[in-house]
Image (cartoon, rainbow, N blue to C red; front, side):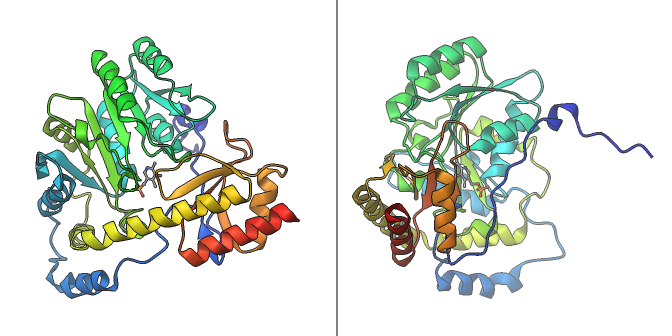
Length: 363
Ligand SMILES: *Cc1c(COP(=O)(O)O)cnc(C)c1O
């Protein structure tokens, strides 16, 4: 037997790894530290009997999309409708669908590193040529370089991430505006990944319009305390939603996920309150890192990137793990020499992290 051979262009693509280790304090994947409200779980359980399990789910997920549009329109001078929204199994499936619709063989995607590794990865898996440009040393975007790269590469897709994972930095609205103008001038699409958008003061949702080539992606995995659910969505122009609908599989979003998403949105006020609490804890953790003299970067998300001095990243990561605190070890990633990323947890978890770090740095 001759085994089928993996596509040649995939043989060199590295997988995506995030170790799942059993520890007391888990601050490595930017999930919410707390479970969703008990009332949510109860409401969901009460509705399960209403699902027609023998039937395919609503293919358009119309109710969920309409409700997401309503939530994302709150406080804005205009309203999105369900036709501006597409929901999928995590925002990663949304990113993949965008790459399938607008990337692919013969097309280019442009990324500014360091950023979310899955943008480049997903684009490559979809057969897209990926061009990676560097951010400045402080992880801000060099706009002149970005505009030059867009003019030279004429990408079909440009990825931005704001707040950016893993740096935490928010992309200034003027920067996003300048990049969008350039992307439109070469007929491309700007994808702004806002997985952490609710933690930040500004959003590219302001730019979403039928006449503009920008789409914003968001997720229930971080703010909505529902990483296990696998639900994400995009907000974009109607023409884009129609395009992307061409590549998603029929009935890709199951009835349970649609119901759980709809039910979660009934708890929007509680979630907003939690976001405020996480932001307050972030500021406390930032101050704690400051007290320890640790280098860090301003974060608009639910995590902080930091670089302990005088010790290697591996050493500090292992020291934390020995004290049952797991953070993300970015120290061997390109451009992130010696850096670790810590998710904001509960006050107790953040205390445990700061105490463990203080011990390691004093030791
Ligand atoms: C966590 C994260 C996602 C979320 O992916 P899901 O598939 O929705 O869980 C997307 N983008 C970024 C930048 C993230 O950090």
